[in-house]
Length: 276
Ligand SMILES: C[S@@+](CC[C@H](N)C(=O)[O-])C[C@H]1O[C@@H](n2cnc3c(N)ncnc32)[C@H](O)[C@@H]1O
Image (tube, rainbow, N blue to C red; front, top):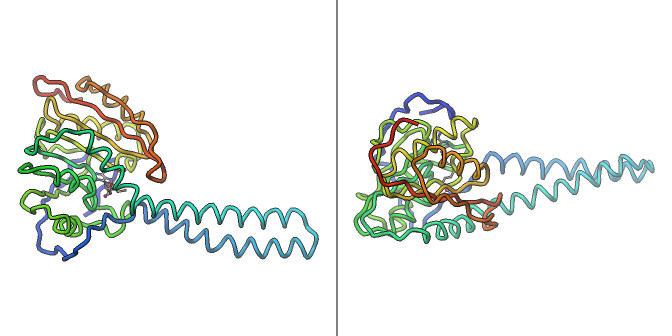
């Protein structure tokens, strides 16, 4: 099922079942941005070949510009290789550290309802679930293959099994974050989102997504948005809803590459929110 990323049309909300859950013993939260990594691999392989050819030709013909272009190609290829390494390291280790830092900011009672918007293979979702005794976690996603390697609800359930999270406390739902009209207002104690909102291309649509997250949050509930881009913009969107308080942005966190920031806020106590 495909959704246009910036679309406001109601996404067909569909619950996922456990039928095709593979059995794994170790959780695997996937490699983020596999398309970007694939492109970088191509460049890292092609550029050195071109660079070496140009450098040799430049040396043989004493052609300075050709030599400089060859050397530059090799330097760019080294930069791309380093970026690939940092991105994979970030997906494999760094984002787990960021998850723990973010979840440590919340004092979980143990009976909360938590929503992870763009849960992918369940990094935040299951991290939160492990801190609950009886609460439930809901993961909303479009399961885009562009944004995470082998992104599929079956793999999220498999990670839940590997993490020892009881499956009756995990719900997965297909849906577009820009329109969560299938979720009632004031439903969740905590709303989390990691590396997801930047995938929405326009500022207006990102504002809509943030407003939707605030709408479904219970009065007094907490929200944390992790991202590598636009985080200050999200802080502005949160404030513009007029429904949140204690908005604060974390410093840049280099545990991930690209580095991330987190914006935290709380929803004011009060009556049901008006349409933003
Ligand atoms: C880089 S992955 C991050 C996944 C997970 N939060 C994590 O930190 O590992 C981004 C996720 O956002 C999801 N996504 C992208 N656009 C979305 C949209 N409009 N609504 C809901 N999810 C979306 C993708 O399918 C993907 O699972």
